[in-house]
Length: 142
Image (tube, rainbow, N blue to C red; front, side, top):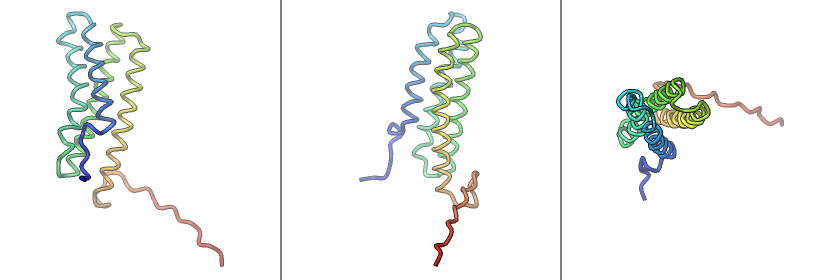
Protein backbone atom coordinates (compact mmCIF):
# COMPACT_ATOMS: atom_id res chain seq x y z
CA UNK A 1 0.00 0.00 0.00
CA UNK A 2 1.27 3.46 -0.88
CA UNK A 3 1.74 6.48 1.37
CA UNK A 4 0.47 8.65 -1.50
CA UNK A 5 -2.77 10.45 -0.76
CA UNK A 6 -4.91 11.52 -3.68
CA UNK A 7 -5.82 15.21 -3.70
CA UNK A 8 -9.47 14.14 -3.72
CA UNK A 9 -8.88 12.58 -0.29
CA UNK A 10 -7.94 15.91 1.30
CA UNK A 11 -10.93 17.19 3.26
CA UNK A 12 -9.99 20.80 2.52
CA UNK A 13 -9.97 20.04 -1.21
CA UNK A 14 -13.43 18.45 -0.97
CA UNK A 15 -14.77 21.46 0.95
CA UNK A 16 -13.31 23.93 -1.54
CA UNK A 17 -14.82 21.97 -4.46
CA UNK A 18 -18.22 21.97 -2.74
CA UNK A 19 -17.96 25.70 -2.14
CA UNK A 20 -17.08 26.29 -5.78
CA UNK A 21 -20.19 24.47 -6.96
CA UNK A 22 -22.32 26.49 -4.56
CA UNK A 23 -20.73 29.79 -5.62
CA UNK A 24 -21.46 28.90 -9.26
CA UNK A 25 -25.13 28.28 -8.50
CA UNK A 26 -25.35 31.42 -6.38
CA UNK A 27 -23.64 33.73 -8.88
CA UNK A 28 -25.83 32.62 -11.78
CA UNK A 29 -28.76 34.23 -9.95
CA UNK A 30 -27.11 37.66 -9.97
CA UNK A 31 -28.08 40.38 -12.46
CA UNK A 32 -27.21 39.75 -16.11
CA UNK A 33 -24.72 42.63 -16.23
CA UNK A 34 -22.65 40.81 -13.60
CA UNK A 35 -22.37 37.61 -15.67
CA UNK A 36 -18.90 38.54 -16.93
CA UNK A 37 -17.98 40.83 -14.07
CA UNK A 38 -18.38 39.95 -10.41
CA UNK A 39 -20.05 36.61 -11.10
CA UNK A 40 -17.22 35.45 -13.34
CA UNK A 41 -14.58 36.61 -10.88
CA UNK A 42 -16.29 34.78 -8.01
CA UNK A 43 -16.60 31.57 -10.04
CA UNK A 44 -12.99 31.72 -11.24
CA UNK A 45 -11.43 32.38 -7.83
CA UNK A 46 -13.65 29.79 -6.14
CA UNK A 47 -12.50 27.21 -8.71
CA UNK A 48 -8.88 28.28 -8.53
CA UNK A 49 -8.61 27.54 -4.80
CA UNK A 50 -9.00 23.73 -5.15
CA UNK A 51 -7.25 23.81 -8.54
CA UNK A 52 -4.09 25.24 -6.93
CA UNK A 53 -4.07 22.35 -4.44
CA UNK A 54 -4.59 19.82 -7.22
CA UNK A 55 -1.84 21.31 -9.37
CA UNK A 56 0.85 21.19 -6.69
CA UNK A 57 -0.33 18.19 -4.65
CA UNK A 58 1.75 15.56 -6.45
CA UNK A 59 4.79 17.79 -6.92
CA UNK A 60 8.01 16.18 -5.69
CA UNK A 61 9.25 19.36 -4.04
CA UNK A 62 7.79 20.34 -0.67
CA UNK A 63 8.33 24.05 -1.33
CA UNK A 64 6.12 23.78 -4.43
CA UNK A 65 3.41 22.06 -2.42
CA UNK A 66 3.60 24.90 0.10
CA UNK A 67 3.31 27.40 -2.75
CA UNK A 68 0.15 25.66 -3.96
CA UNK A 69 -1.29 25.81 -0.45
CA UNK A 70 -0.49 29.53 -0.22
CA UNK A 71 -2.09 30.22 -3.58
CA UNK A 72 -5.19 28.21 -2.64
CA UNK A 73 -5.50 30.30 0.52
CA UNK A 74 -5.23 33.51 -1.50
CA UNK A 75 -7.89 32.39 -3.98
CA UNK A 76 -10.24 31.38 -1.15
CA UNK A 77 -9.88 34.81 0.44
CA UNK A 78 -10.35 36.49 -2.95
CA UNK A 79 -13.64 34.62 -3.27
CA UNK A 80 -14.68 35.94 0.15
CA UNK A 81 -14.01 39.44 -1.17
CA UNK A 82 -16.18 38.86 -4.25
CA UNK A 83 -18.99 37.52 -2.07
CA UNK A 84 -18.60 40.54 0.22
CA UNK A 85 -19.04 42.82 -2.79
CA UNK A 86 -22.10 40.82 -3.84
CA UNK A 87 -23.55 41.43 -0.38
CA UNK A 88 -22.69 45.14 -0.59
CA UNK A 89 -24.47 45.29 -3.95
CA UNK A 90 -27.40 43.44 -2.35
CA UNK A 91 -27.18 40.44 -4.67
CA UNK A 92 -27.02 38.20 -1.60
CA UNK A 93 -28.21 38.62 1.97
CA UNK A 94 -25.63 39.49 4.62
CA UNK A 95 -26.41 36.22 6.42
CA UNK A 96 -25.61 34.28 3.22
CA UNK A 97 -22.30 36.12 2.89
CA UNK A 98 -21.45 35.45 6.54
CA UNK A 99 -22.17 31.75 6.09
CA UNK A 100 -19.83 31.56 3.09
CA UNK A 101 -17.21 33.65 4.86
CA UNK A 102 -17.18 31.29 7.83
CA UNK A 103 -16.92 28.22 5.60
CA UNK A 104 -14.09 29.76 3.57
CA UNK A 105 -12.28 30.79 6.75
CA UNK A 106 -12.58 27.20 7.98
CA UNK A 107 -10.83 26.14 4.76
CA UNK A 108 -8.17 28.81 5.30
CA UNK A 109 -7.50 27.42 8.79
CA UNK A 110 -7.21 23.93 7.28
CA UNK A 111 -4.80 25.25 4.63
CA UNK A 112 -2.74 26.90 7.37
CA UNK A 113 -2.51 23.54 9.13
CA UNK A 114 -1.54 21.80 5.89
CA UNK A 115 1.16 24.39 5.30
CA UNK A 116 2.59 23.87 8.78
CA UNK A 117 2.56 20.11 8.26
CA UNK A 118 4.41 20.50 4.97
CA UNK A 119 6.90 22.88 6.60
CA UNK A 120 7.80 20.13 9.07
CA UNK A 121 9.16 18.12 6.13
CA UNK A 122 11.77 20.83 5.48
CA UNK A 123 15.09 21.21 7.19
CA UNK A 124 14.50 23.20 10.42
CA UNK A 125 16.81 25.99 9.25
CA UNK A 126 14.78 26.61 6.09
CA UNK A 127 11.31 26.63 7.62
CA UNK A 128 9.23 29.78 7.43
CA UNK A 129 7.59 29.09 10.77
CA UNK A 130 9.90 28.37 13.70
CA UNK A 131 9.22 25.16 15.50
CA UNK A 132 7.48 25.46 18.79
CA UNK A 133 10.01 25.17 21.57
CA UNK A 134 10.13 21.85 23.25
CA UNK A 135 8.57 21.80 26.66
CA UNK A 136 11.15 20.97 29.29
CA UNK A 137 9.89 18.75 32.01
CA UNK A 138 11.48 19.01 35.38
CA UNK A 139 13.70 16.08 36.13
CA UNK A 140 12.25 13.74 38.73
CA UNK A 141 13.45 14.35 42.22
CA UNK A 142 15.67 11.65 43.67
